[in-house]
Amino acid sequence: MKHEVPVFQLGPQGEVMAHAIDACVHCGFCLPACPTYALLGDEMDSPRGRIVLMKEVLEGELALEDAVPHLDRCLGCQGCVTACPSGVPYGELITGFRGWSEPQRQRPLLQKARRTALLRVLPSPQLFYAAATLGQHAKPLSPLMPALLKPALDLLPRRVPRRNRLQPFFPAEGPIRGRVALLAGCAQQTLAPNFNEATIRVLTRNGFEVVVPAGQGCCGAAALHTGERDLALRQVKQNLQAFGGENYTAIISNAAGCGAGLKEYPVVVRGQPEEAQAQALAAQVQDISEFLGGLLDRGELRPTLPASQPLRVAYHDACHLAHAQGIRREPRELLRWIGGIEVLEVPRGDLCCGSAGTYNIEQPELAAQLGQLKAAHILSVQPDLIASGNIGCHTQIASHTRERGSAVRVMHTVEILDLAYRGEL
Image (cartoon, rainbow, N blue to C red; front, side, top):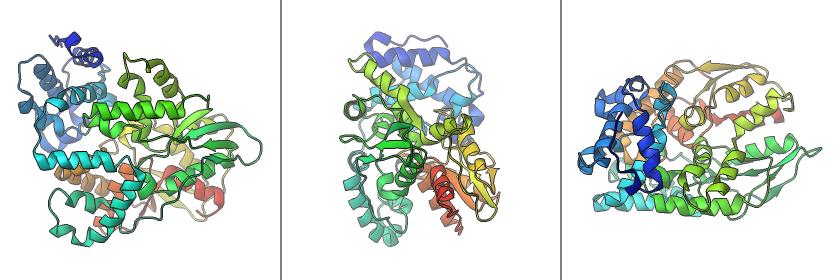
């Protein structure tokens, strides 16, 4: 696609955006892979259509306010990246465009206040825990709440788990095979603290020391993908400082969105002094299933006990694990490795569940439709357990399966492994 994007006026991200626009050949393979196109059937709500819109805005041919309704409806799930035969880096394009356009937008006051509150509360485990605890008591009143607050309340679990503070260091069991650093995450420390606890137990059982670096914070993905580039840069630089200075065996993430965010750091700081440091960090980052899957491939993963009875486990592909990081095989093989488990494939499993960071709060109607579809598809295979690898997906799927009256438990892949190691599965 030929373009006249003023690359040098757009800063370091201008070249990234121009390259993505240029790579698109308008073939349409992305359309059936796009969740919003599947729901709305509108060309402008497809990746191909959005690329045209962004091109025209950047070239000055279209007013920003005419394009943003369609661009805001993009989940950033990157299903189109997997489907694209031309290798268009759509994720880099939409992220770069949002960072460029957000300072120019005039949002309604209440919408702006909600975004500010979200991006202040979500990255802070202390603030989020306080907000979630308060919201837990307000949850029964959700139908009476203002439209701006209702989506967040609906997604909260019935009970907020007790918050456990992570120690800075966990010793390996048996001979030491390496040392890894753990990204603790933000919301999941409140909503699902056992994700980290199970991750640490599985790693230490396999001979790895686990360090939880002091000074780490939010990975920056939520701010980056909503266009708050300055905030994202501060968060990125904080983590570069926190995780720098030691050559770990790996930097482990157990949240697909966070892991993908860490791997994006070189693009985020492109052209800045921290670029080489960001490349070094990104090269060490592995999702927990990627890391454990590597051990399994090499015959180095310690065996688990089998399940006490046959279990049918529906595996949900988190978008930022399957599409953004290309990790599909490893979680399935880890689950199959546990004796007695049958891994079930979910119909239309490549379609986003509708969580997508803050999307299910900012675009609640579309997110709810996708959540309902995902829940229906998962429950259609009649699983005993549901496995995934991302806190957003976990929350969304649990909410919508619960809405359908299902008591099937949603778990992180590493939680299931942890139970198998302890003989409690």
